[in-house]
Length: 601
Ligand code: GLC
Ligand code: CA
Image 1 (cartoon, helix red, strand yellow):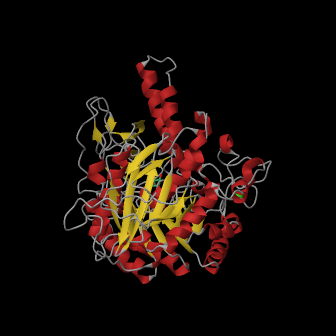
Image 2 (tube, rainbow, N blue to C red):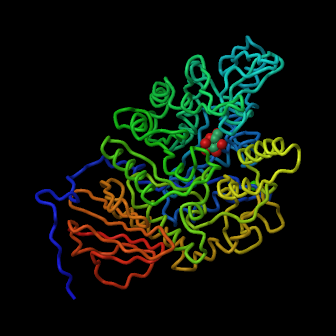
């Protein structure tokens, strides 16, 4: 039966018909970036650790998936206290992963396939094993003393030695470590094995630019800058306000985030290094970067970075910014965060990245999705649809394309991550003291760890059905426990199943590439207060696409606003079979159903 066409209820202007918005077409805006967590991707020499030669073996898989650029997590010389985010030499390769010849070969193989390579640059801090730090530590008048933050401590009421200020490290505990030899303390926003570089020293900035040029000259096409919004510290390093009176160290995040000279320093990197190459850059910005602040880093005329990683959507399930303190969030809250970023970037000639999973953030199916195994695949496809139909550059973390969930039932000994162990240890000690020395109950801590630990995503990749899933040899012990709970989720099986999450990702990536509006178009959310559904229009000039996602284990009803003309709507992709041959103004969606329509008028 022909559907009666409803009349628009707005006179004159139609809010769903925005004006034409043009945006410069640039390769990296249209790229799909795939993050390789190198130690867990593919082992080529059976030592249980993924490596560069292993990546080469899997390049055809990545090409077939449709990815354009590969971001490699840090592969430099490192004691691996923080899995390589503690660098001891920026221009040499960690023996665990191979050598410079392997890197050159990998880079060439990537370029031969018309793909690109992004390197991870960690310059807020070095490893405490870096020769710069070892030199700096030698004496108060070392020529590199001011490459790091060394300060005199304070004396407490009972004569005890206290750090120079009360800052708390982002991994817990004080942000300062005492050095006996010179009777001074050094600053580390992360673990004590990651001393912060002092960017106020010009020689540090020169050294950083030299490292970027080293990798740019070798063929690197993209740079990811680790915690780059933390590099400029406030003068005099003032104390943070006291919010936890029962301990010395206090959260100091606003004091060291987006500090006074950060734009000057990022601009210098751009001028003296990045601008020499046809490359792109992404700055990781934890600890709070608003959309307004982000514009200052990525605005078209700023000459700083191409895009940032913001964390607003990642903070939704954290109570008061504490990731271990889990809170439930609603779909309208998620919609609001996405809408704010999408629209702000568009309105301010900015550009941003899109991600819902990475080496620090747990698996999206387990976190933004469902616990019901029946809907796992549908949910993974819905999350893919949601991510790949927004405006920005898409990042996919290895295994996300398989719909990998978290491993289950791990004990604290199974985890390797420094942040996880620091959290566990601090809680254990605090509770033990409170309990007067008895064994404390740690079950709620383990619950948080099973939900939020970074190791939930860092488990080795599942390639096939063999023991160790083809990641390493069958008899080998992988560096981190395999996600044995879900060993049946792997590339080999999904490759053969036309309805698999993997094949859905492939199709969706092609859909995105065929519709430039997906990269550049405006974003308008529909019905933002719906408790289950997230829906939006993408529009560019006369072209419009409608995306509808039911984020729930229950069916849902969606009313398309009258003003939207859906007469000629055509289904582009969906994660269920859609039998109706015509889109109706009232649409019923099944649990975790996602659909994309092009409206054609
Ligand atoms: C970034 C990295 C994370 C690391 C931290 C310190 O947040 O993504 O893995 O632990 O910086 O380098
Ligand atoms: Ca290896």
